[in-house]
Image 1 (cartoon, helix red, strand yellow):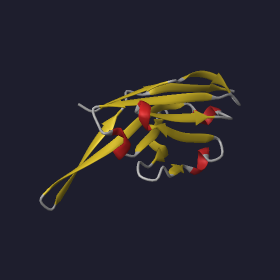
Image 2: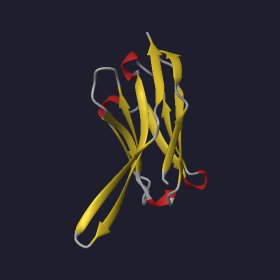
Image 3: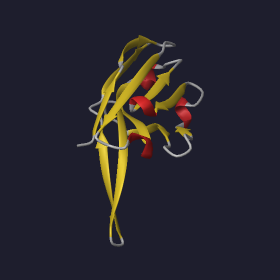
Length: 124
């Protein structure tokens, strides 16, 4: 079974830093893009950052550009999210995610896997 294990959250003051980790198992890790999402109380889950498997290209939502960096270590089946200059509005539960696509005939199936979430709280 595919499993994602997120960790590294905590309580930090505004301007501080945290590094989240997502360890994956049950898949050929270097073949799949991995993303981080977050969900704040009363808000919808939003994509934060992702990193491709083939060329290592990364994407960050505008609100975290220049502050967050996503990286991966394929030897350790781990993706990291380095979060600097944290703001109170970054407070949320952070989830790592991957989507494994399979095909049967002409039909494509998406299989979404989520980590259990790690709480990030930024105090002002």
